[in-house]
Amino acid sequence: MTLDQKDREILRLLQADATISINDLAAAVHLTPTPCWRRVQKLQAQGVIRKQVVLCDAVKVNLGLTTFVTIRTGQHNEQWMERFVAGATSIPEIVEIYRLSGDADYLLKIVVPDIKRYDLVYKRLIRSVELLDVTSAFAMETIKCTTALPMDYAE
Image (cartoon, rainbow, N blue to C red; front, side, top):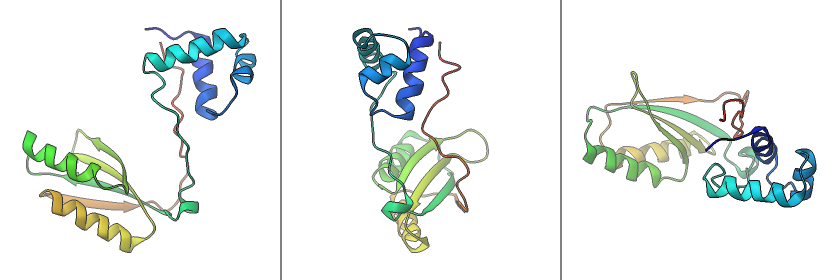
């Protein structure tokens, strides 16, 4: 599958505002609405566009504390990983989970109202599986936060 310049521009615009009308989108990329709509449908069918969502302001929904948690485990087996994934994904405050290379095994992004609620999430997490080391870093300020992926590398 290859993405041409029109596809990349459609994706840039949709990432900025998924509510843009097909007529406005088509005009912005110099297409008529029907071919533009077909391109969007194709991008969805191919899984390039996974889904469309609403992005909420965390502070306005009382989730003003963002915590990044690195986890090291002493166990590297499938059973442990399945329990960890099941436990961590069942906690709604954990909004992102990454398996890493290097010193830490996992990185979690957690959003909560305050330290007290973070502690409750932490306790739920450690009940689900044995962990060797858990390190938390609390975000002091958000400098950049975007869900838009750069399209310069899309082929």
